[in-house]
Image (cartoon, rainbow, N blue to C red; front, side, top):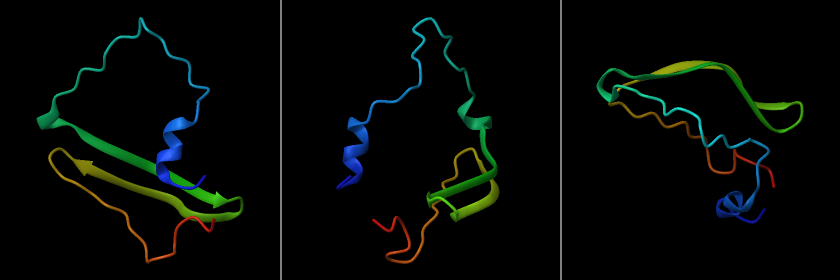
Length: 73
């Protein structure tokens, strides 16, 4: 891949269910929770290892690294 926009061209194996019910949330009372998230670009070289955190409603979180600390490709 040459850039992040190439990701939009990738077809997924996730089935689309047109009859699925919409998720109803209350934006002023919602929290996003990540529990034990791990990620690696290269197998065996974890970038995130069992990371857990929550983002309360109305708040923003950014995870950043130093220049060049992302994908080695």
